[in-house]
Figure 1: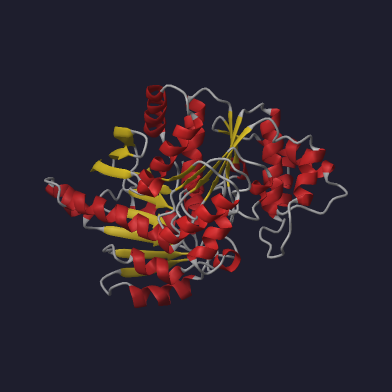
Figure 2: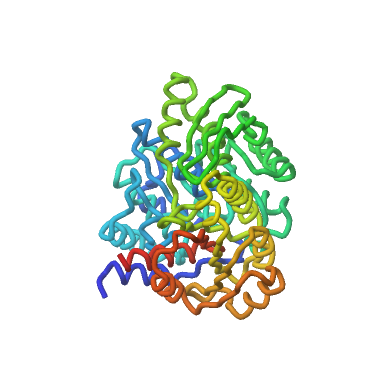
Length: 445
């Protein structure tokens, strides 16, 4: 085993979650001993139940297109741990990950051990400092208030869609979850929010007032019009309290990405305040045209799509996107295409601590011909026997339900079938499933 594999194994062995209440004193001591690598950099902090990864990606691309040197911190990764830490879009190298880890470990030899997410966060800060980044875009992990990313002050706070997820840690009501997400607001810097929920909005507004925030933008009030949406992309226009934008283009079929783009538009107006408005609009157009994000209704190969929807709110957004897209395809004048879109296969896996029944009930609203249930690798994966029992109660009898022991088996079966251009296939339910399918596909190529 080489040193990189050893380091990854060590990090993966560190506990990922904790219920114990704690402050950031230990984490901040690590940062201080490492020379406060976060200092002197502009920090944009992104939290939310759904959409935070896409917004982090879009903001990072926007700042890069503006000529800034950008470091991005994501959660989770799909295949390799390196995906979480990027500079100018490039993943941290194996060598740099090892070097930064050894540096962090040495700095904290006499300190309590950091959690899994905390140590990755500190590694990212060290890497960003060594790479001389100017801007850091941070995606929170589990929550917000007690998230490692909240240990450093931010120059802009962004909160995306809020719904119920990780209830064991974040609470069982929207208000409780919103309170955890709003916890990233630790200063008076501007706040951009697009929660999709009035109660969540009120929680964020209360927290912002408490922290003395004077610039607070609710993107949910923006007027959005979608001119065209299909499997190739989406054309849309936006009008907010400050500007009107016409015919933006996103090269994705995921309608829910429009809300994330609107959030980024408002963030851009804050980040580039005082600069030429037409230049900012041009940056937005370029960033949107270039946007891609794996596992967000992304096409792995023709007719095969991946989406990480793992909670009811995300599933609802996914079904709304698919409903419009499949209906549009069905009404096409191309009869051959009509017939192909009538055959639909859903591949589903989930973590057992999620609201699996809620997600399956929402997904069942799409008329699936086949449902393939599978377990991903790991202790958190829901058992296919339990999934089968649940699915047979939820899906209509005409849906053929099958169970598979592994993602590898699913991909082998698909390979034996050969080209299936006549079937629309969606794999969803967990980003762990998305990651395993992606890895299996790459290994086969």
